[in-house]
Length: 96
Image (tube, rainbow, N blue to C red):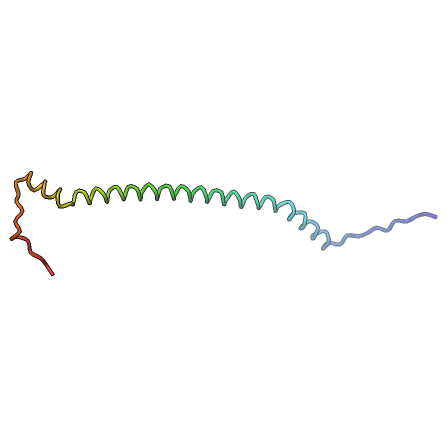
């Protein structure tokens, strides 16, 4: 007796489904690596911006300290004496 093999016909939907699953398996690691690289790039840019902000805050604080030092009463009195100006209490007007 001869054994006869039956040909199993794979339907088009089965082929498409198989191809889709294979593409999904192949592309998922690529997508994961890509998304991690984008996240890493964003984190690097975030750290750069934090560094710039930190430098600017330090500079602002330094400038603020200089302004307070220059605007102090003792400094103003020293500069007034240097230019020959006098402090007269009668000339001060308080505005309410």
